[in-house]
Amino acid sequence: FQQQGVAVFSLEMSKDQLSEKLIASTSGVALAKIRSGHLNDDPGNNDFERLTMALGQLDQAPIWIDDSGSLNILELRTKARRLKSKLNIGLIVIDYLQLMSGKGEYKGNRVQEVTDISRGLKILAKELDIPILALSQLSRSVDSRDDKRPMLSDLRESGSIEQDADVVMFVHREEMYHRETKKKNVGDILVAKHRNGQTGAVELAWVPRLATFDNLQGAKISRRVNE
Image 1: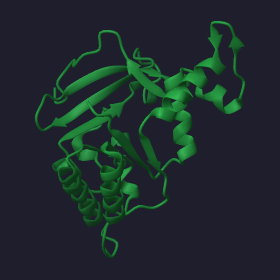
Image 2: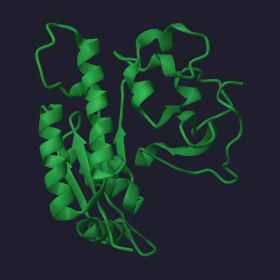
Image 3: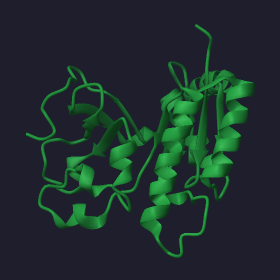
Image 4: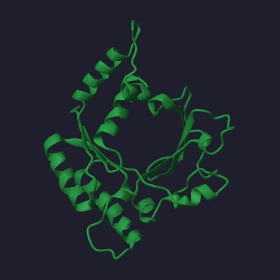
Protein backbone atom coordinates (compact mmCIF):
# COMPACT_ATOMS: atom_id res chain seq x y z
CA PHE A 1 0.00 0.00 0.00
CA GLN A 2 1.16 3.50 -0.77
CA GLN A 3 1.84 5.56 2.33
CA GLN A 4 -0.57 8.46 2.74
CA GLY A 5 -0.07 11.65 4.68
CA VAL A 6 -2.10 13.42 7.34
CA ALA A 7 -2.95 17.12 7.26
CA VAL A 8 -3.62 18.70 10.65
CA PHE A 9 -5.24 22.13 10.79
CA SER A 10 -4.62 23.21 14.38
CA LEU A 11 -6.50 26.42 15.09
CA GLU A 12 -6.22 26.13 18.87
CA MET A 13 -2.67 24.91 19.56
CA SER A 14 0.53 26.09 17.92
CA LYS A 15 2.68 23.75 15.85
CA ASP A 16 5.24 23.64 18.68
CA GLN A 17 2.63 22.68 21.29
CA LEU A 18 1.22 19.96 19.08
CA SER A 19 4.71 18.67 18.27
CA GLU A 20 5.52 18.38 21.99
CA LYS A 21 2.51 16.14 22.52
CA LEU A 22 3.36 14.03 19.49
CA ILE A 23 6.92 13.57 20.75
CA ALA A 24 5.72 12.60 24.24
CA SER A 25 3.18 10.04 23.02
CA THR A 26 5.63 8.54 20.50
CA SER A 27 8.65 8.38 22.81
CA GLY A 28 6.93 7.51 26.09
CA VAL A 29 8.85 10.34 27.80
CA ALA A 30 6.64 12.43 30.09
CA LEU A 31 5.51 15.74 28.65
CA ALA A 32 6.61 17.56 31.82
CA LYS A 33 10.14 16.17 31.47
CA ILE A 34 10.35 17.24 27.85
CA ARG A 35 9.29 20.77 28.76
CA SER A 36 11.59 21.05 31.78
CA GLY A 37 14.58 19.34 30.19
CA HIS A 38 15.06 17.08 33.23
CA LEU A 39 15.80 13.86 31.35
CA ASN A 40 17.27 10.53 32.43
CA ASP A 41 20.38 9.11 30.82
CA ASP A 42 20.48 5.90 32.86
CA PRO A 43 21.19 2.67 30.94
CA GLY A 44 17.91 0.92 30.20
CA ASN A 45 15.91 4.06 30.94
CA ASN A 46 17.53 6.62 28.71
CA ASP A 47 15.15 9.43 27.81
CA PHE A 48 17.61 10.83 25.28
CA GLU A 49 17.64 7.57 23.33
CA ARG A 50 13.86 7.33 23.32
CA LEU A 51 13.50 10.94 22.23
CA THR A 52 16.07 10.51 19.46
CA MET A 53 14.21 7.46 18.16
CA ALA A 54 10.85 9.23 18.34
CA LEU A 55 12.17 12.32 16.56
CA GLY A 56 13.52 10.09 13.80
CA GLN A 57 10.15 8.41 13.38
CA LEU A 58 8.25 11.69 13.36
CA ASP A 59 10.73 13.25 10.94
CA GLN A 60 9.87 10.52 8.44
CA ALA A 61 6.14 10.59 9.18
CA PRO A 62 4.04 12.23 6.44
CA ILE A 63 2.37 14.72 8.80
CA TRP A 64 1.68 18.27 7.65
CA ILE A 65 0.63 20.80 10.32
CA ASP A 66 -1.02 24.15 9.60
CA ASP A 67 -1.36 26.30 12.72
CA SER A 68 -2.80 29.39 11.05
CA GLY A 69 -4.63 31.56 13.53
CA SER A 70 -7.69 31.77 11.31
CA LEU A 71 -9.14 29.56 8.60
CA ASN A 72 -12.33 29.69 6.59
CA ILE A 73 -13.92 26.89 4.61
CA LEU A 74 -12.74 28.28 1.26
CA GLU A 75 -9.11 28.49 2.42
CA LEU A 76 -9.32 24.97 3.80
CA ARG A 77 -10.67 23.67 0.51
CA THR A 78 -7.81 25.29 -1.44
CA LYS A 79 -5.12 23.97 0.91
CA ALA A 80 -6.65 20.49 1.08
CA ARG A 81 -6.85 20.15 -2.70
CA ARG A 82 -3.20 21.18 -3.01
CA LEU A 83 -2.09 18.72 -0.32
CA LYS A 84 -4.10 15.91 -1.86
CA SER A 85 -2.45 16.56 -5.21
CA LYS A 86 1.14 17.00 -3.97
CA LEU A 87 1.38 14.86 -0.82
CA ASN A 88 -1.40 12.31 -1.34
CA ILE A 89 -2.93 13.00 2.07
CA GLY A 90 -5.34 10.34 3.31
CA LEU A 91 -6.75 12.14 6.35
CA ILE A 92 -7.56 15.70 7.39
CA VAL A 93 -7.81 16.65 11.07
CA ILE A 94 -9.35 19.96 12.20
CA ASP A 95 -8.93 21.23 15.77
CA TYR A 96 -11.53 22.52 16.12
CA LEU A 97 -14.56 23.20 13.92
CA GLN A 98 -16.02 26.16 15.83
CA LEU A 99 -12.78 28.14 15.41
CA MET A 100 -13.26 28.11 11.64
CA SER A 101 -15.24 30.76 9.80
CA GLY A 102 -17.71 30.41 6.96
CA LYS A 103 -17.66 31.80 3.46
CA GLY A 104 -20.02 34.75 3.69
CA GLU A 105 -21.66 37.42 5.79
CA TYR A 106 -23.81 35.93 8.54
CA LYS A 107 -24.74 39.07 10.51
CA GLY A 108 -24.19 37.33 13.82
CA ASN A 109 -26.03 34.14 12.83
CA ARG A 110 -23.44 31.74 14.20
CA VAL A 111 -25.70 28.70 13.84
CA GLN A 112 -25.98 29.26 10.09
CA GLU A 113 -22.23 29.84 9.83
CA VAL A 114 -21.38 26.57 11.61
CA THR A 115 -23.97 24.82 9.44
CA ASP A 116 -22.18 26.06 6.30
CA ILE A 117 -18.81 24.96 7.71
CA SER A 118 -20.11 21.50 8.57
CA ARG A 119 -21.67 20.98 5.16
CA GLY A 120 -18.57 22.35 3.47
CA LEU A 121 -16.46 19.71 5.24
CA LYS A 122 -18.89 17.00 4.15
CA ILE A 123 -18.65 18.10 0.52
CA LEU A 124 -14.85 18.34 0.69
CA ALA A 125 -14.53 14.83 2.14
CA LYS A 126 -16.60 13.42 -0.73
CA GLU A 127 -14.70 15.42 -3.33
CA LEU A 128 -11.26 14.29 -2.15
CA ASP A 129 -12.50 10.82 -1.14
CA ILE A 130 -10.75 10.99 2.24
CA PRO A 131 -12.06 11.14 5.82
CA ILE A 132 -12.11 14.44 7.70
CA LEU A 133 -11.84 14.25 11.48
CA ALA A 134 -13.30 17.48 12.87
CA LEU A 135 -13.11 18.16 16.61
CA SER A 136 -16.03 20.07 18.07
CA GLN A 137 -16.89 21.95 21.23
CA LEU A 138 -19.81 20.88 23.39
CA SER A 139 -22.49 23.13 24.82
CA ARG A 140 -22.46 23.99 28.52
CA SER A 141 -25.62 21.97 29.08
CA VAL A 142 -23.41 18.98 29.87
CA ASP A 143 -22.23 20.64 33.08
CA SER A 144 -25.78 21.19 34.30
CA ARG A 145 -26.75 17.50 34.15
CA ASP A 146 -26.14 14.77 36.70
CA ASP A 147 -25.10 12.39 33.91
CA LYS A 148 -22.08 14.09 32.37
CA ARG A 149 -21.77 11.74 29.43
CA PRO A 150 -22.20 13.88 26.29
CA MET A 151 -25.01 13.31 23.79
CA LEU A 152 -25.57 14.28 20.17
CA SER A 153 -27.73 17.22 21.26
CA ASP A 154 -24.70 18.67 23.10
CA LEU A 155 -22.80 19.49 19.89
CA ARG A 156 -22.35 23.22 20.01
CA GLU A 157 -23.92 25.87 17.75
CA SER A 158 -25.46 23.66 15.08
CA GLY A 159 -27.57 20.54 14.66
CA SER A 160 -26.05 20.09 11.21
CA ILE A 161 -22.87 18.60 12.72
CA GLU A 162 -24.88 15.59 13.89
CA GLN A 163 -26.65 15.40 10.54
CA ASP A 164 -23.57 15.73 8.32
CA ALA A 165 -21.19 13.47 10.23
CA ASP A 166 -20.96 9.78 9.34
CA VAL A 167 -19.51 9.02 12.78
CA VAL A 168 -19.77 11.01 16.01
CA MET A 169 -17.54 10.02 18.93
CA PHE A 170 -17.25 11.68 22.32
CA VAL A 171 -14.35 11.43 24.77
CA HIS A 172 -15.49 11.16 28.38
CA ARG A 173 -13.52 10.74 31.61
CA GLU A 174 -15.65 10.10 34.68
CA GLU A 175 -12.98 11.27 37.13
CA MET A 176 -13.12 14.78 35.68
CA TYR A 177 -16.52 15.14 37.36
CA HIS A 178 -16.44 12.57 40.17
CA ARG A 179 -13.08 12.34 41.92
CA GLU A 180 -14.23 9.38 44.02
CA THR A 181 -14.99 7.23 40.97
CA LYS A 182 -13.40 3.80 40.67
CA LYS A 183 -12.58 4.52 37.03
CA LYS A 184 -9.25 6.23 37.67
CA ASN A 185 -7.20 6.98 34.57
CA VAL A 186 -9.87 5.44 32.36
CA GLY A 187 -11.61 7.16 29.48
CA ASP A 188 -14.67 6.20 27.46
CA ILE A 189 -14.95 6.69 23.73
CA LEU A 190 -18.70 7.01 23.21
CA VAL A 191 -19.70 6.16 19.64
CA ALA A 192 -22.99 8.05 19.55
CA LYS A 193 -23.54 7.83 15.80
CA HIS A 194 -22.22 5.44 13.19
CA ARG A 195 -23.90 5.62 9.81
CA ASN A 196 -22.68 2.20 8.73
CA GLY A 197 -21.90 0.46 11.99
CA GLN A 198 -22.53 -0.10 15.66
CA THR A 199 -22.82 2.49 18.40
CA GLY A 200 -21.48 1.84 21.87
CA ALA A 201 -18.70 2.67 24.32
CA VAL A 202 -15.06 1.60 24.35
CA GLU A 203 -12.84 1.98 27.41
CA LEU A 204 -9.29 3.25 27.03
CA ALA A 205 -6.49 3.85 29.50
CA TRP A 206 -5.68 7.52 30.15
CA VAL A 207 -1.95 8.16 30.56
CA PRO A 208 -1.66 11.60 32.24
CA ARG A 209 2.12 11.96 32.00
CA LEU A 210 1.93 11.56 28.23
CA ALA A 211 -1.42 13.33 27.80
CA THR A 212 -2.63 10.46 25.65
CA PHE A 213 -4.89 7.43 25.58
CA ASP A 214 -3.71 3.85 25.21
CA ASN A 215 -5.32 0.44 24.85
CA LEU A 216 -6.90 -0.94 27.99
CA GLN A 217 -6.42 -4.68 28.39
CA GLY A 218 -9.62 -6.38 27.33
CA ALA A 219 -11.08 -3.17 25.88
CA LYS A 220 -14.17 -3.80 23.78
CA ILE A 221 -17.53 -2.33 22.87
CA SER A 222 -19.18 -2.71 26.24
CA ARG A 223 -22.63 -1.22 25.98
CA ARG A 224 -25.03 0.63 23.76
CA VAL A 225 -24.79 4.40 24.14
CA ASN A 226 -28.54 4.80 24.40
CA GLU A 227 -28.96 2.18 27.13
